[in-house]
Length: 199
Image (cartoon, rainbow, N blue to C red; front, side, top):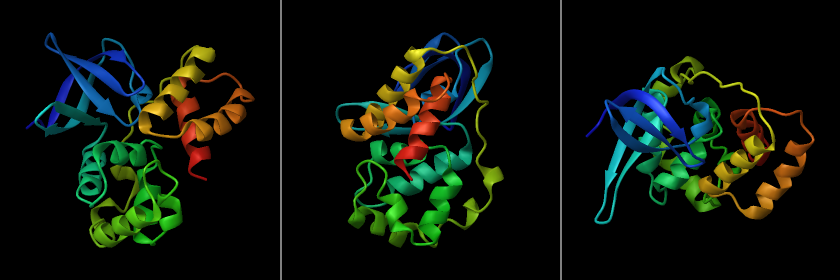
């Protein structure tokens, strides 16, 4: 099992990043790929690995606490890796922890693939297991990438929403609002879209 990988991000796609570690490229599925930046700077990505009959998959996180929250979500009956990543994608892990602690089922059902029953199961299973996640400082974020953007940035953000499992009608609803905003980076567009989708 891997604890983390340390290398250079060489490719960013809507559902994953590729991390070059000493000449080996690792495809790592992450909640928000656009939080990372392609370049020569070395990046540490915490890893959760799953192995099935048909695939070996790496899931990546910017902090150890984010990885641990992902693993707690995976332990809930009815939550798979895709749903757990979608929950973490909005970048506000503290809001997720608070929603679980405060039995806020309505907030949790706003994520793709999470119905009322599953949200209640999340609260039931995790409510008393999140004491270690009580401060914002525990969730380190990689630096926000600000770069010259055009509509390609918005298109990438919308494609990332599809990869996270959001429905086309929901994506189209937030697309209208995003188009009226000043041009932004893909990460900023995606963050804004996730906030709109979880309101």
